[in-house]
Amino acid sequence: MTRPAVRFPDVELLLTGWLRAQLPGVRVVAELPANVESHIPLLWVTRIGGRALVTGLVDQPRVDVDAFARSYQAAAELAVTVQSLIPTMRGVTTGGGVVAYAAEEIGPNRRPEYNPHVRRFGATYVLTIRPA
Image (cartoon, rainbow, N blue to C red; front, side, top):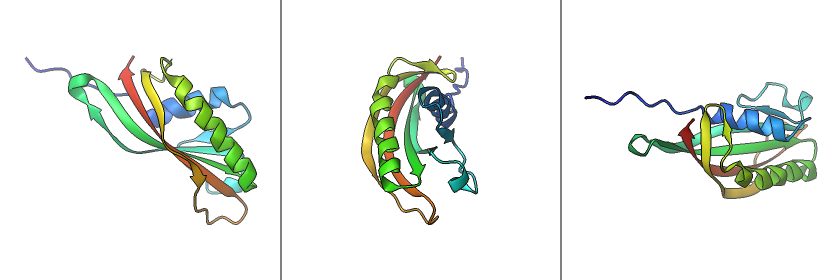
């Protein structure tokens, strides 16, 4: 007998929705708008890898969360706020998944940004998600 296919929740959708609820007034997106400077403060959530363990029924995505603001100070503060929130996701059921683990892999750091009107800080996180 074959196992049914396992479909894991979209981590970008899960994380953008959850961060929006935690940070009213901050635009949170999975796709960066062309005119970023018109939408700041802004968080950009991007899955950058990870692996799904179908036998263990978990997805372990690596996710970048980049904070955009008008100054380095404001971008850094937003990135540090996200840094404090991510570990509190353990046990959260959202977006069709249950977050079993959430931790920082690479802490907030300046990231290159070619738009002279914005500054960018980002961090990398690892989550373990089970289907709800």
